[in-house]
Length: 130
Image 1 (cartoon, rainbow, N blue to C red):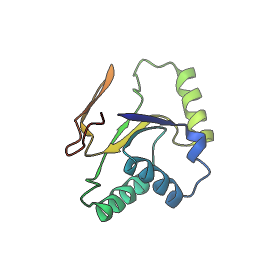
Image 2 (image 1 turned 45 degrees about the horizontal axis):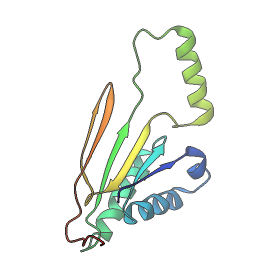
Image 3 (image 1 turned 180 degrees about the vertical axis):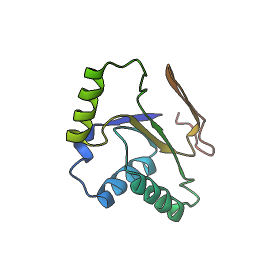
């Protein structure tokens, strides 16, 4: 069964970088596809990948990460730009989505301006329950 877990920004904003990475990696290792509101800092993303590489084994094959940034349209009015900039200053890097999942389940993540497509693959070696 495929499990998709949405993690609101409020659930991770008070955590330290180390705690945030540990929590997200734990969810992925439990074979869940995680949709995180907002995005990780660049150094957190790098640390997540580094830790993932250290933990690869027979059961855990790695992680797939994709960050979806909101489209910034050139035709945005001055008021919208100002509102967006103030929100970013007050709330931090909340804009966007981060999608994380085990490499054994995620085949590919495609992004284009209108949609996100996440392709999964069947797990190998799992016996079906009768």
